[in-house]
Image 1 (cartoon, rainbow, N blue to C red):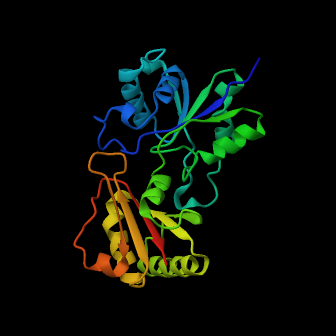
Image 2: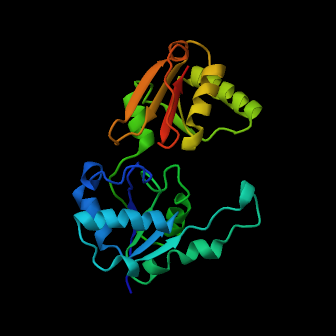
Image 3: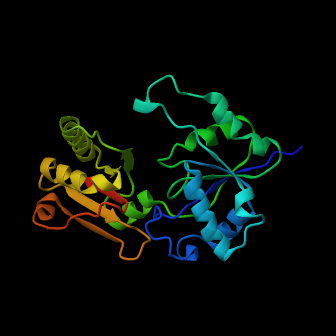
Length: 253
């Protein structure tokens, strides 16, 4: 029996904040049609994946009723991110549909799967198992924010989340600023939306006045924006960030 493929399916960037947006505004028609054909999925959250498939169905009818589509959730990491919960068998079981000849969709909560996303592990296992991996075009908040920032797009690094604890966060910001200055490398950061404003304030309190900071909010959504300025100028700006809409932060010292 021929193996199915692992299809890397892009998602919207709205996190369900604005599900009234027509999918064709952010996803290519071919991608939507491919999503409608898939009957097996691996996802971080089955509920949000079903919500997306309802939106897909409004554009390209699903090949079978939504309630019969199989959605398996990725194994969750143990609390604290350390030991004791690494279930390799559960990860490998996610690929069972592909071994049985079905194409399997991998989807993130937002943007491209396996980029700043735990699905990367499933992609690695697919390669080890000889399963073809097919990436499809779609939005990436990180690359869209970088492109819109005007900062260095020739050398950049995604550093993910910063420590929540204040002293650790401050130390990490200083470390990233020094690295950026030395390598002239843009540093990209993200935060849980309800902590967007807290991160903005921490960056402004810690970074040097001449460091350039770019903030992108709600990219691809109505009213989404990107603003880039020096830290000194940001300090004089009374902008506050929303607590439900994803943001990307970029700095270049």
